[in-house]
Length: 130
Ligand code: MN
Image (cartoon, rainbow, N blue to C red; front, side, top):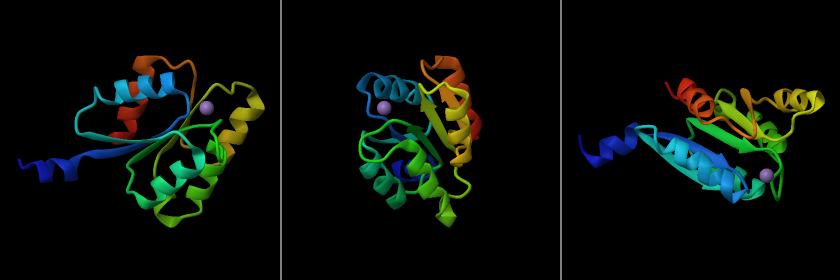
């Protein structure tokens, strides 16, 4: 198979996270998955623009971000037809019941609490990529 064909097959995963350690952990886990292309941003506003210009198979969003937060990003994306069915996963330290409800009400597909558990994180990602 040519590199071009492989690039076409690769699933595109967008990650917006401002914490360097978390980003390193997420990308390290994602890099253990075959046929995946990881696109990252560390700000909410630029992250949203990057996603809008792209063709994601899966989106992973932190909630607390500079620019605009993950909840607003998700709400904006859900207004756009082609992003209405894309899996969007929130990864956040917010753990109060009300916060979880706000996250799900914004249109997120699933919610993962920080600190993440590596296997659970990977299994969740795999579930939405296959
Ligand atoms: Mn953050």
